[in-house]
Image (tube, rainbow, N blue to C red; front, side):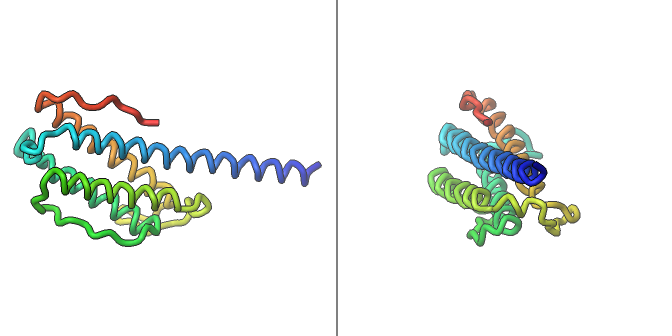
Length: 167
């Protein structure tokens, strides 16, 4: 009986981990769709818009998002390399949307292919050593934080953001 229970527990735990992994991947895909829809809604002539002197321009905020997700997924989730734009690059709407799509796909692929058995693997991060699952959470949190800003940018331009889908 104890061998049966051990096998049952192992299968159940693996099943739970797979559900969590799939949830992260699905959440990333929903986040990608939301981000690209926001970028599409912002008129090209407003990509240099910023709500105040202390804020980034819309296009620079998008570049910041690209740089962060590519760095985290490439360096910490074994995603490989991606040609990042310079933070002050002047990139038009269509080119930036293409770059964002490529970056979101790059990060999404790294996330999908990163095996759950490595989630406990410690990584050396500037904020200290941590398990790689925290990098995955950071990717989601960073994207959510800045998508919230982007929603405000849209509203300040009289544009209703897309309906939120976060699951």
